[in-house]
Length: 211
Ligand code: AMP
Image 1: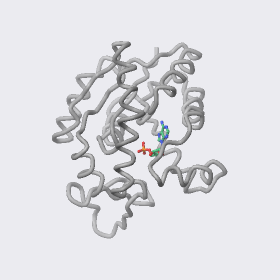
Image 2: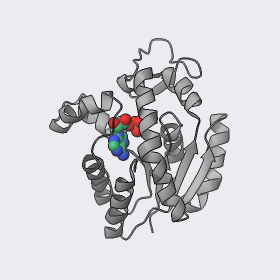
Image 3: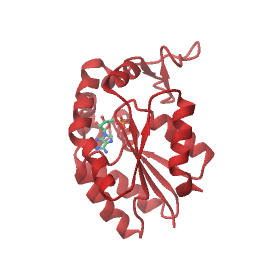
Image 4: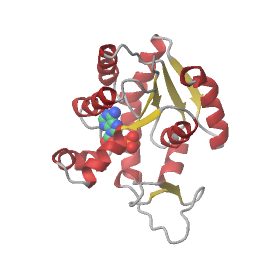
């Protein structure tokens, strides 16, 4: 049966980076609701126009919108291992996800919680930059963009917005970790330290579900 892996963690915890690497090395489809929503905003679709301000303020879009995105993914990828990066972000989303998965005879196999302190989150995100053409992420200190690549700062990476996103993380998303803890499906990982070290911690936690 196809596996379903969930990544939970504060903004800037490395979820996206590790999801990308994992999907290169293993047969697993990474799904970022945030990235999907940003594409809608960029393309100025009806949905994009509706959510643009919410995203740039660092708030969460409605559970209904987020769940719709994920529903479409499971509908179109029935036999694939799927990695949800940044979903669920509320307990309501977690409950709705279970319902969606039941319809495909699937379940959340493991939820990985990347633990990173607020201080480290602020340090990481305030230096984060994005190439608006490719969507590739750089960091002015740790991973500067190559010469000739122009980058921008995401609106929601500005310091005031990061603080808001962190506040929402603690209020809305940290309880999602408890939801999976109760079901004994949580792997808590220290998300600080070198990316390679975090990645190997991640692999030991989830390898059995993706091989
Ligand atoms: P991310 O790229 O995962 O940091 O997501 C960027 C933004 O997209 C978030 O700050 C939210 O506004 C929105 N978003 C992404 N995933 C969700 C979700 N599961 N529920 C609600 N809003 C989300």
